Length: 367
Ligand SMILES: [Zn+2]
Image (cartoon, rainbow, N blue to C red; front, side, top):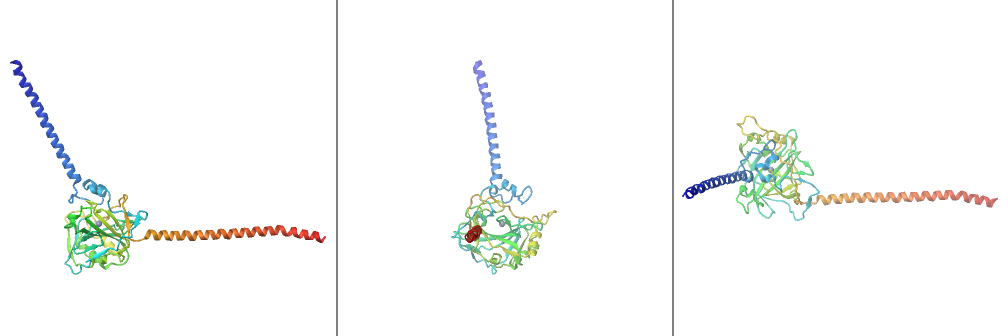
């Protein structure tokens, strides 16, 4: 009786301890699972659109990958387009712009999105000549500052241009809109245009003259439509092509890039408007933040193929080879002339040595 009276309480005690341990362990596991989920939610959410980001400071491009993991991934943009990695591709045809003249369309929205100035574009505008049809969605610009007016995102052999225009298109054969296409591997195609200081551009002025009306973030104005082709360079057959990403968070690696070789020009006054008129924050905020240097620095090419539709490398090689050939011919000619002169000089010396002896012989015969 004694044993039978004590046994259940001992077992009961162990059972209670075991159950408590089990409850504690399960709680701990649940907490761990919740914590893991929260970490994944924060660090792996590719749709973290609403998170704050800037180009400098604690939310600057060096830290984008904390909230936007793709920004720390491979196949990122922009890149430095270096001659030693560019390969000529004979299959690249001139870029085909379809329905770019939207002057008859309805008004276009010009918006300060806090990072750039963005012009909405009708989806009737598109580019052909690619495996899919890509319809236009918007265009925007990247630029520097008054102190350093060099703000293109892509660079050519390390050279940065004053600004860069991006015309963003989405794969309308496969996806309903820009948002749906943005994170798909074949989702986007962006045309990039380098901008340098030169002649006044009436086409760019159709955007720039309205900047004062969209000084602050989220301000929008309706502007008259125009022929978007006028923003592009004359030569549409000379461009670089590579697979890259959005140059802003969430940095999806979903962009087929086309970067035109020929830059377009705007006047220094027009560039000054771009670098001095806009702010990153809302009208209500007390300390306005100038919208300047809104360009991402270049990323590694990482063995990606960077193609060119033109033979710049080959022409350069031909010129270098021709110059080397000419230099070789000149060197050989100089060598032959020098050899001839040396032989002539030696021959002359022999004659000089020989003649007195002949004279002496002659003299002797005369004696
Ligand atoms: Zn851009």
